[in-house]
Image (cartoon, rainbow, N blue to C red; front, side, top):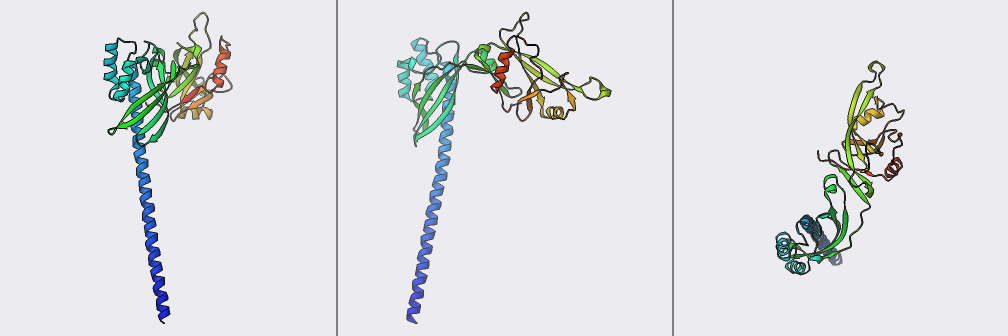
Length: 312
């Protein structure tokens, strides 16, 4: 009987100890999980702060003329950079202005910095790699890039504030293409560099009824934008890049053959779409065989139209 009681006591003690150990492990794992979540949240906040810092710095570059007289340059750097970079780096740049990012010429000029990667080096330091995007008045109106320059920025947390502590500038890269951007409808179109100074022509397409009783009654219509080569003239016209714009409902109706466009037996071909519009190439757009039609055909083969969500 005593042996049985002793055995029962040992068993109960073991279960109790096991329970305590399990509870302790669970608490430890829960604590570790909580710390991990808190660290992730901290990292997200820090990363966003670093992104904002680089964005603000990139927006300041065009205001600092590196070719200005020394007194004016120092004043400009202090006004625009002092809240974003460490005092040590600011002093270094004022001594060697060409080591600093800023505006070297009247055109092109630095417009912003595109962030490519953000790497956490420690709790108080990040490495950011990106590109300085330079534009001219052409890109300012129509979108695109005149030049790119690689940039690496070391960002440190000093007195609870993120500041740029060092910058390494790369060599300017030649831009082999330009970008037409349409913010009204939400798409971009990549063009060869030879199309710089292109123009755009606004027109419209008409959709005709397929009902015999209505004849050629226009039942639908919409905008069409043609991108025109800079060498186009009235005497020597060149092939445009025509882009028809449909609402989703219009495009769906066209596919159901509820109306037709022009006399071609086939309809326009889709180039891309966003949540509001379909962008399409007219059928037989190049049957006049104008100068440059082969170039336009090659441009279209490279999937140049990229839709995005417009802000209308």
